[in-house]
Structure formats: structure tokens, C-alpha cells
Length: 215
Image 1: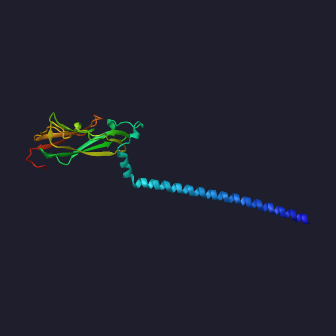
Image 2: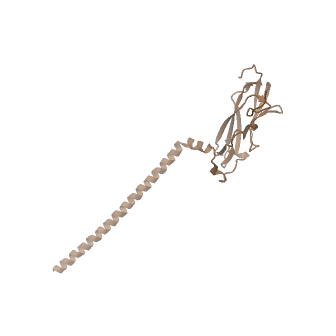
Image 3: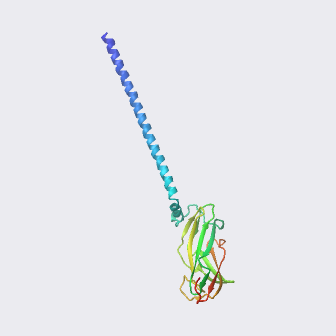
């Protein structure tokens, strides 16, 4: 009788140990599941935060794209801009200027869609030409400037101001003799040195004699 009781006691102990092992394995599995859920939830929250930040700061992120392209992009496969990817627009705050004064033009370069591309948008590449009749009076092409390569994409725009000091025969960018422009009708036009087929519409304005005030 004692032997049977001992056997039953040993079987009970083995059963108890098996139940503890099973319970331990179940607990470890549950903990692993909880940890996996927490990690996945944290990653999801991080993705939402990143998306929200990008949306709220989309203007700043776009402006970063328009900054000068670092040298690391050279040879990266991004092509130079072609004529069908860009357009130029030329405007001025006034259409009348006195000889001896100065007139500032707004030179707007715009990406017209399609693939991203690279363009030199420096002052020496965005050329303003002033003509009177068939005579070329002045051009900013002689202005020297360091290259300013831009990555243009998604209808982005880049604006610069180009000023003409109403002289002829010499660029205001260079030292040397220059002659005040005579009173008359003049035409300004913008072009790209590296993409000659991209030009703005001509802009007509008047130069008055030196005694006339700028309107």
C-alpha cells in the first residue's frame, strides 16, 4: 500500500513539473508577443510622426531641393536640363527709367515638369540683353560669377534680380568706359547661356533723358 502511494506521489510530482514547464513556455511566448507588439506600434508611430513632419515642413524640404547641388551628385545620373524642361519669365517694376538711373528686372527660371534636371542658374548663365532696334546696347553675359548648379524638379521656380544702369558699350559688371543710354524705346530679353533655345518674351520699356524722373 505504501508503494502505491509513493508511485502516485511521484506521478503527481511529474505532472506538476510538466504543468510548470508548459506554463513557463506559455509565459515566455506571451512576453515575446507583447514585446513584438510594442516594437511594431513604436515603429508605426515613428512613421506617422515622420509623415506629419514632412507634410508640415514641406516648404522647407522643397527649398532644400532648390539649394546648390553638392559635388556628390556629379555623375549621379541626373541629366542637364533641356529646353523642353525650362522656361524664363522677365518682368520689371517700372517701364520707364531716366538715363543715368537704373532699372531692375526680375528674372524667373521655372521647371516645367518631367524628370528632375541640373542647370547652372548663376548670374553669368541667366543672360539679360538690352537692345534698341537691331542694335545690342548691353548684355549681362560679360558678368562673371561662380557656377550655381540647381536641381530643378516639380515645377520649382528660382528668381533673381538683374539690374541695368542705363549705359551702353560696356557692362556694368566690368570696369571701363561706358556711355549713358540715349532716350528712346528699348527691349529687354532673357536667355540661358547653356540652353540657348530657352528665352523669355521681350519686355519693352522707355529711357527718358536725364532730367526726367523715373515713374
